[in-house]
Image (cartoon, rainbow, N blue to C red; front, top):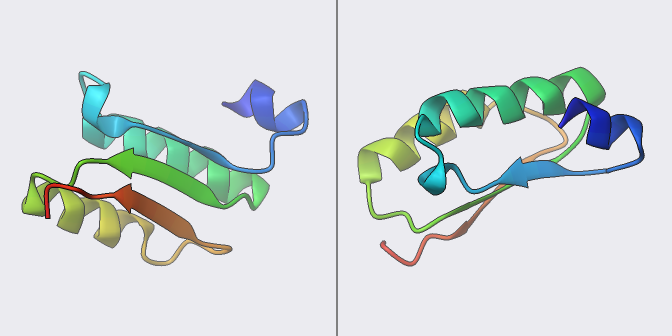
Amino acid sequence: LRDAVKMGAGVVGGCPDVDPDPTGYVEAVLEVASEHGCPVDLHTDGGDPARLARIAAMAGGLRPGVTLGPCGGL
């Protein structure tokens, strides 16, 4: 992710649902975004309300912002 941002990517993100460590993945994405001032776009089915709450709590203070979607499981 860091290399992608250095090469010009303006947004970081991905799909934590398919990572073996979804929380660790989100932490890594948010860290890179915070370091570079990038917005975040995370794709999740939203089937686990506790996971969504954790992501929201972790990302709440990040600016310029975080998008979660499509959250079809809600």
